[in-house]
Image 1: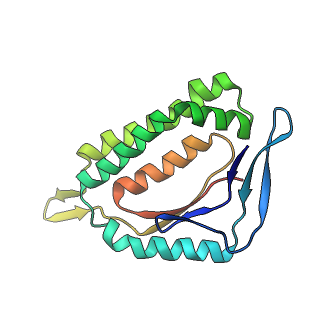
Image 2 (image 1 turned 60 degrees about the vertical axis):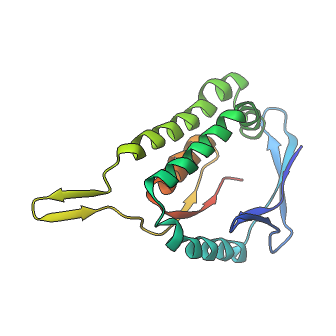
Length: 173
């Protein structure tokens, strides 16, 4: 059984401010397959403050630095393909075949696409006498649904990383 009882905030795994957990139920057999911590407003505030504090430095990273980060994420994703498929099957109830042939590969495909788009994305563009500059907007808040979890997470997180935004992600429980 997997237990995820800490939150990743400001580059480290931290205890929630309140010890409140939820059992993750495998919909295929209705057995507990994991346990997660539930956050509260204080946890969210801590995450937002950390993301806000990280924004000035992260927003100034180069295209190459962001490509390196996305590349490391993609490499780890590929390495843990089987673990991800197992988690999607157990936690979401997707048939193993669907998890292995669609759920996990689609997230990997979105990561690879983000890398390819970032390689040539024009952050500055001259239009006549005007220069349009596309720059990071700030802290992004993401909430993902239970279905297609990797797809939904990657479709939000990869563009934020690519464009220099920091973020707070709340996956579905």
